[in-house]
Image 1 (cartoon, rainbow, N blue to C red):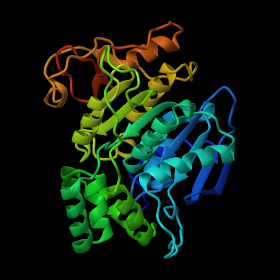
Image 2 (tube, rainbow, N blue to C red):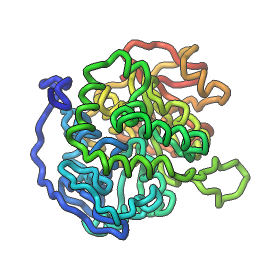
Image 3 (tube, one colour):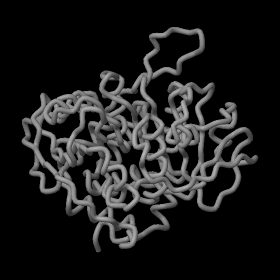
Length: 377
């Protein structure tokens, strides 16, 4: 059983691009990096960072080998960063090595960009990787054009969560600890093949001692301490300055955390995409839908104007599961993805919005909350 055997061959397109694989030295240890494509002065680089228990292959391969993704990677170079000791074949880290905190890992990113001569990025992170890239963007806003954050949790673990994590670590094996972080309960109970595949990956491919250190670092994270700007309030509010797309599957264990993070970010720059019928790893479960949203997001920033786009149907109706999370807040009548499509046709659109858009992707759901927009992928 291979890691991505569930991907149909017809949906995979192998695109040959120059790849440079290196260990980059930073103040917090060596990080394994994979650079594909050639950086261009007028274009950002798509920068990825994986979640706990994963590496760049297990986290992002279903996305990057999908045929729909080839249009993006033909235009934008890609740089994958793997946390210390998380790459395939990694040796156990030395006892004297102090594993970096989440904050320190975010400060290792500029060293990687300097090493490859990169100036600006569009970040794509999942879980712990999403936290790291968000922290990087907060501290280095001039280097980040945009962020796509999947399953981000901007809060600290908290005392009770920290105690529970330690107890779980003492009583469970590493895979049994990591799997509930990656996947929701329903997915664990029903999608046995997928869960068995990732459990096998964590057990046989990853260095479990190193994964444990990365997991402890994530559980010891501080809150991002972002604050939603208030009209007429302070202009020095700490928040993400770049366009940001938050993505979460409706069966993900991170749903509440992502919705909470959305409530703390600038609504004029942030879009929440909650994917229906989707598990804990949207880029693995429904890569085509994630790619569709990613294309519109990148086009909304003025890139990929010639990229091929499949048709999205935007509709307005009433009633939706989204309202149970975000129904108390009114929503803008025009969403980020619609504006991106208009932008790609050459129209000039203002970036501001009075409220953050909350969208739900679904192949079989036709309803959405009142005054909300739905993107049916």
